[in-house]
Image (cartoon, rainbow, N blue to C red; front, top):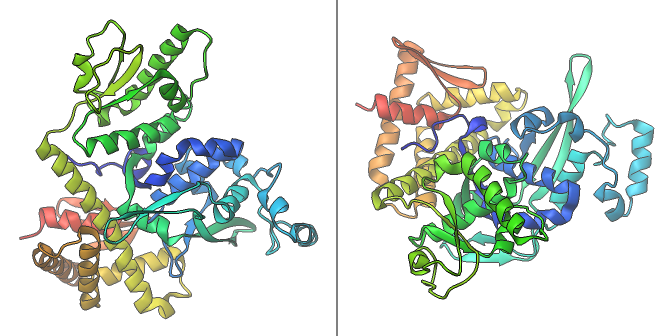
Length: 439
């Protein structure tokens, strides 16, 4: 089993803030903006490794549009009713300055479809109650939460023209939730289900399934109206048509996500059904006879497979957080020396640092701190920390002696007699070394 083997754009799971799934239908109140708001939040999870020295993440509209399968031209279209105009006291002064100096100037306002969505995420509390987990695992809530603490834009020269890049700083609670209160989801599945308007249902039902699976159950029970709302189905005058539409849309959903949830099926319980057959599928072992209950069930993983899956998820979580911790440590150590370099050059310097003996004490401390933060235990720490130091030291030695590691096209390359293997992140290279060169 390897949940995280595929490319992130085409199926690799991401750790998504669970609040988004819990409140997925709340987005509907934001009308035409809801699609873009959801896309940005999902992209923020995908983009969670790309942090800079000052805690900002970069959103390049071209890459964002490609990743989330959006029309790039639509992102730059002027919003018919930008949020800042109605909610910022000096909005008219800002618009006048923009008129004088031009859009491609420091006086640019947040007026496009994309800019308006970013502005909303910075100034609007989307949900009535935002949940997060404390360090001891307690679930807490806050009434006032904005996903973004700060947004800014940068005008970048590209030849004789300019392009705009956005930078955002998330609320720390959002970043904590990606390691403590997350939902495993796939960008590819979400995108494939946008056209049939089942993208919301994908996140909603994935979340519900995860919750009941944690209690060892393998089914969910709904009345037809609730399931219709989840599947984004209107109310039909004829009950039979509504039931047929629910079945049709669920089959479409199942055809896309079924490989991730073996045995996924929808069955209907009628008044003449023997409800005892369904009693073990629903919470509370209901036995009274009812009309047209929709029961979604799936094959429950064996205990050892479930534990292996959970272990892999937490290992992936650990890898991501360790990567971030090492990047932070590198920038804190080398910040002044890197200020004049491009983003690509900074990445290359980071990998050069990781593939050397320099700062081994810092790397070791970051490994230890991240391990305790994610696993909340030190029992297995000595063994894994020793392995980490051993592998990183070996890579540093090989690089010094054979120059077998290089950086090209935003990837780390390892070359040996078998050829060249490419990795998108240091942790991918490290795991490869553990698997193939740990002796």
